[in-house]
Image 1 (tube, rainbow, N blue to C red):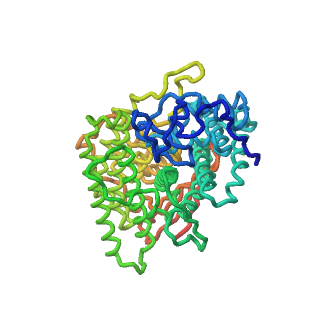
Image 2: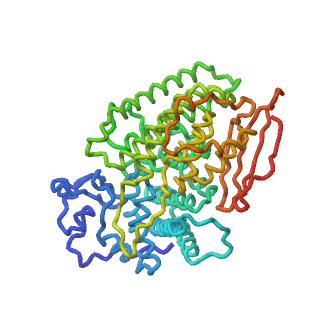
Image 3: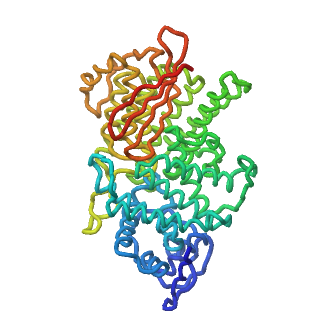
Length: 565
């Protein structure tokens, strides 16, 4: 890899100090993690470069207008960018990194990645590839997806930048020093976002899993994984930002059945501190909820694996009760957080806190029904919780999704208003999917599907189109003869709350219900989506394992493959 030439600062009077003081061309006292000059004047100290520490305050991570500092540094470090690269970086800078990281923005994007673009060719090229993919999705959103035989110029550009990023990364993959680990992990995050955006979910998962294993090896417990030699490094702000981002990606993948169960618990990026009495920020609430979700999913996995095993059930029962108490503590902190009057919470924060409240409801349902993975009728005992979840989701739709209340930048000739609705973190798609698949009260699951059908975007690994295809097929199989009548029953308003007389007891018999469902995501946008599940046989003691395949190009389900279990 050709080493970038050093930044020429011979004409600059300020050669040392934090990035903020350099940009202002004033003397910096070089205090750590923030310099006193910035703190005393109320400014946000942007630290001493991506690898040199510094801390980003709450003010610093708010999306804001940028100077030409980043563009100047890029040109000085790597030579003049081509017009196409410069245009693409502008899109990434003003659109991609302010939109894709949502709902829960962390300094990983707002501080780390922009600084890394000026210091590491691998990160710059990865950012250009992601920005190009995001721009293409924006311009093509709403159009039917067709098989692409010949690549257009933009696709060639993004793949070229992607290849350059991988080539620039090779030297770092051979080294175990702290800087190389940071670069490799940061690039891995961008690659995961890039592949998810393109609908290449197998490759996205491969990047995510590689990063998770490296984090477990480097930052996890002293015991190495799978007999490998552990690499332990000290942690700073940069490490925390990277690990937190991977933890967020892992949670959304785990909810889709695409995570790494061995790494559900003990994640170094999630808090192990007690839940506070109230939350100081949306990110604090999200970090504690992510930890609880992974703990719940791990317990589900343990119950499944221990069916008839040696571990006493009391061990899992005690852990189940502990997690229920933790979820209740989280809810108490959530209710004690005065989101409406606290100036720390914006309208966008209120929206995402409501989402987290819905995740708490879903986590409680999963936890209460995890004792038997093969007994789907247990969900019928929690109709009240499903009803609460639907109320929460309808409230989110009415208050925010139908009328989005935020804009990051005014439109310009180069940067128009239109932008993709896709985001990189989990939103409400997993909640709607869960409601449609696990609640057998027809009126509730119908409304979940109706809301999902009005959601035309991606949330990281969650694609609303794929979630809708799977959910409707599961409902079709379970409802059987009654499925044809469902369209006639779909006459209610999308924002209506079911009346008491509409909440009829679930009529789906036990033998028709699907369980142990696993979804196989496609390798590319025109690939094959698989649905694997188990189902009891009517009037017969036995279970069949079935696999259905959906061809995204032909838009139809393939033949069923049956095998007795």
